[in-house]
Length: 133
Image (cartoon, rainbow, N blue to C red):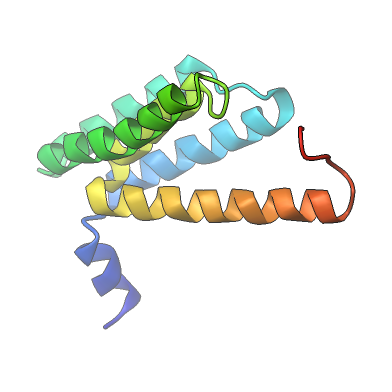
């Protein structure tokens, strides 16, 4: 099994996923600098991914991905009383779901949480952050 087989098994199509990835990278840079993900970034990402998914015949999977990823982060947003995660993260997750589809978007969310936890641990160990930060 090759990497392309794995990508195909996850329902990842090239152009919508590329649009979602490009939007996520822009959002990450802005979020790192400002602590905020502008709606115009998540909106443009969502629109590009949806249009490309529709053009490639995968609009159904794209919408299922938006529901899976956006719904997962919306649940976290509501469960943490809007403190643990921002609404911009929810919107961007839905946009990523449009590009990646349901299975790959959940894998991407899992990877993002693991990476975020590792970074937070590094900040705590190096005393660049405290537990309440």
